[in-house]
Length: 385
Image (tube, rainbow, N blue to C red; front, side, top):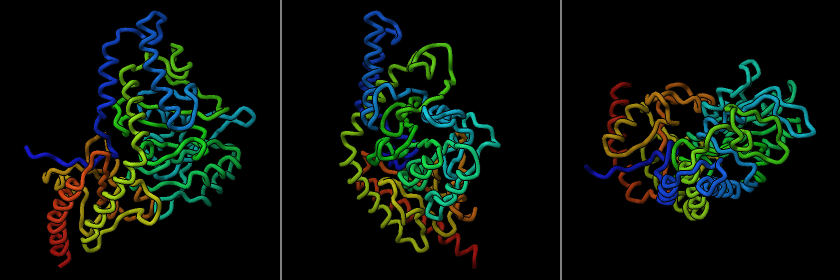
């Protein structure tokens, strides 16, 4: 079987060698990390070493990190009515940008009538004036805005968002799952009160994530109760091997972040240049800051499902946008929120690169696209003749 090209890194990443080794070592341990004997202390050490790695990566203390089963659970836990800072009123409403991940749009434990959507611009950046207007309408709100969009790669002006939110007495939750390991940031630069992260987006194992808290955040209520794990924020014996792999992946990703970002950006630009040789091709959010690895595009007459299958048959794994649990290609709610017609949003394809992507991979993807584009363009011409 010919070697395939993987360009769906925003959906998930390959497991890093460092993470695989750390997990293999953890699987050899027999102790429960809550036990006080030697075996338990060895397991606890792995968990706490990983906690320290995650904390340092985003400029926080180890005790501010809560390990969870992944980004979805981390987002759900963060979206809790009653969150507050010590001297402020608790939040009673939830404001989410219209381009958030489904786990945020679901609203966590907020009732549907307490949730409002914040508009975004045509470029996929949050509408700050609409955010101000929504905050002025009622009691203090928790605002949830992702640092970088998982489909377009657009990076949000988080310092501006935070200033507006905090001036109105609200709290800010930042889903940084796609940004972590791709661009440098910490809680101080985002001014976030809560940040969610996921292991499998940076070369760690699936099924492990984290919620990181800023100073003074109170009122977080655990979903799972019945044990004192994670400082009472998430009951249940910790996934020691998954957490150990997460910590190893974080260390590797942070060490290589600057070099990887520069190299991948060069490959992304090479890829975009080749794609733009197709007449009428549109790259979304190309006029704002984006993740260095992400291209979301469409072309006249293109249907995402046809394009994804075409790429796959040519040996190239791409996506129609965010990964969907149904395995079906769905219209992009992100592009619809940005104001694009449904026929445009249904034709968007995402190519995302990673640390092992090569120039050869990019060239093979462009070769596959040229063949696919010829078919699509001919079909469009026939349909309009």
